Image 1 (cartoon, rainbow, N blue to C red):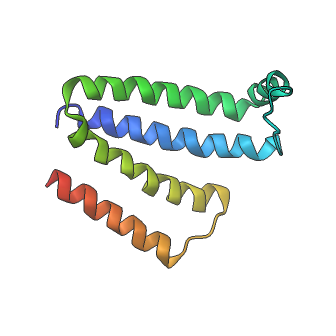
Image 2: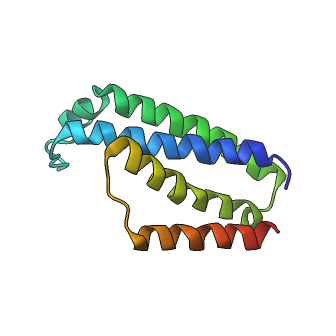
Length: 120
């Protein structure tokens, strides 16, 4: 695979962005998201620094992913995106204090095996 390091960086930045967005979302509380409150809700959302940082990381991840797609087949590159599950699970446990279960570990092992099958 060409640009595997670029692909992995894209996946990693996307996962970090997701965790940072969760931190920001936890500060929001409940959002009604109706047509009547949408402008106010959007302003409320973009005032949260973690949400802005998460969007920036997603944007960089997106641009790197476009670079990957210019050099590789989608069906070959996309399994790497599943590594997000693993990165997010690990970060959720250590940074967000979420619990890890045997089912989560088993699911993660299956994902790793699936990625390994595609690339070996």
